[in-house]
Length: 95
Image (cartoon, rainbow, N blue to C red; front, side, top):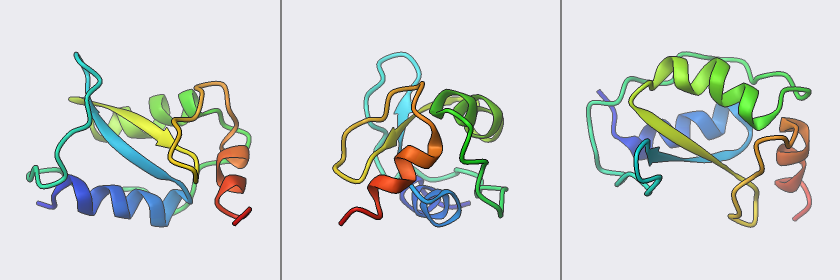
């Protein structure tokens, strides 16, 4: 099974934004070399109208129930849960 780093890359390629796996209790970043993580099962990006929270609940938590996730804007800041995915994705186009 892949490492956290590889799955984070898979997520970025599919969804169009970067993420960080986080510990559910402490919300600390999970080390990227942690193995045994199942690959991301989705092939198409989630709808632009979904919020960050909706994406996390409908996709990330279903695939990785033992973890939490931070969705990152292009500048590396964590996106607010109410932010639409289209807005997050657009930050990667602004450069």
